[in-house]
Image 1 (cartoon, one colour):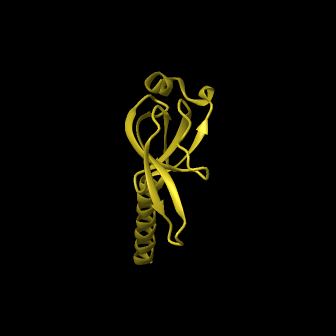
Image 2 (spheres, one colour):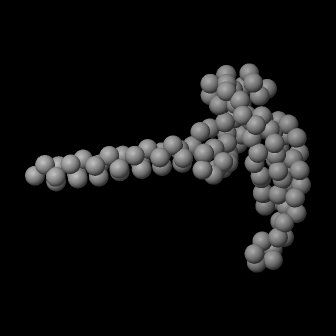
Image 3 (tube, rainbow, N blue to C red):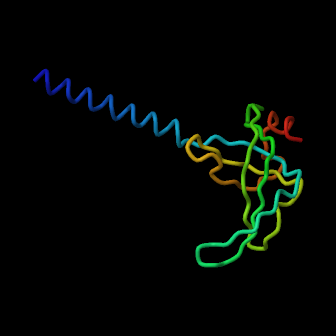
Length: 119
């Protein structure tokens, strides 16, 4: 009986440890940036031969507490244009995948501590 309890407890500890590692690596952390450049244009071609234009950006971002990080991300739009200058973006970063997506946000939705850093 004691062996069964020990095995169950050990299995629970292993599962909790794996869950913690997953949470650490894949939980998003959000940064806010203000687009201040047109980005670096890069021409590319998809696997099916379709040509596209992407823009690579390197901008300083800040989280809701005002902690800064140099962010590198790429934008691909259907109209092949760069991101709108002076736009605010909320960028999702994870430890495993780095940039994990972004969305445009109005200035009023940017936390004040982040806004002080990026404006």
